[in-house]
Image (tube, rainbow, N blue to C red):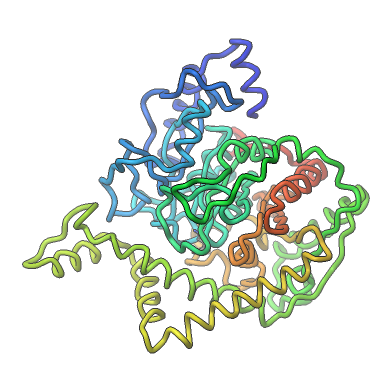
Length: 481
Ligand code: GLN
């Protein structure tokens, strides 16, 4: 993990070039089977004079984050040969810290989707079992960390795109408060929901990386002033007396008419974990959350995100970037470029988005969705007055097999599969850590979401709970891959 690697580098037991070569060899070895990367770089480029803890440490960036001079495709044909001329702030900051970019990771096309199966370069497979997906959209970042290729990777999260693949990959995934990390250079999907965040194999590593990349950025108007806290220190605080709630409508097996063994096991192990939390001094209580509101999460998310995505991606015409379409005039050229350049899933979402944004539908669809979003956030804030955080399973079980997947990873338990969107609706800091294995031996994560601005508290709680799971630092073993 990061601290150990840092010490080895300091003591000159290993050089940054060796670390890079090692990571690159692994990345290449696993590429054909798992498809974590869009681009693997040839050589270690990093600042000589940096003195941060990340100096010399290899990492990966999701391929929707702008890297000047390095291909950045968002895993879409419409950007398949796009080489940006500017750096995202998160990349700049990591460069400055001396961290060494190994490569750009595969995502669901344009970060839309939750399965890791829609990249233009093919599906991403789960390191714990190749028959299973890893989830998305930050599929490659999750799998690169789960495979132990890099100690950390950067992703983006609009609905749950860091926290869901973290759950399926048996790694830690953290999305901080909205604005905590600059989004300058992240390809916008749904701007009111988009976040940059971190994957690693421990809460401490996630905290270390967040410390380096957080902070205000004059290039991103939505970025927050730095809170001046060192999360890697804050995590060690005593958590005795911290109050957590879980939602009855999500965690009670009786709520599920079509319950499966997998779900039963996940919920039972979740209760066991809560018991351990209580033994360690947490107060954990069950609360009720209006079921109508819970059921509205997914349609509300789709309405808002498709509308914003349609508008944000209107610049992908094949004129400024990407392969030019053929045609007699600009309109025909754009039509052809977009028809060829996007997959079905993307086109479906743009059709929905355009419909939602039509003047006559805006009030009924878009503005209504915004109202429901507000009601959900208000309800959450009300609960967070009394509690320090919400704790819930990140999914109803481990990753499904490719044969079982649809655009959504599970339709049958859709409140359970979609509650992490609450974190995006309200910009709440939210983290997933591994907590159990399902009956197919696939890892499952637990999610903790806290008050806006209290990233330190969420990390602190997760750091403590990580010690209770017995799964700290797990990695998909050689026997799996
Ligand atoms: N699975 C969600 C979707 O399909 C989330 C995507 C994301 O967070 N980028 O849009």
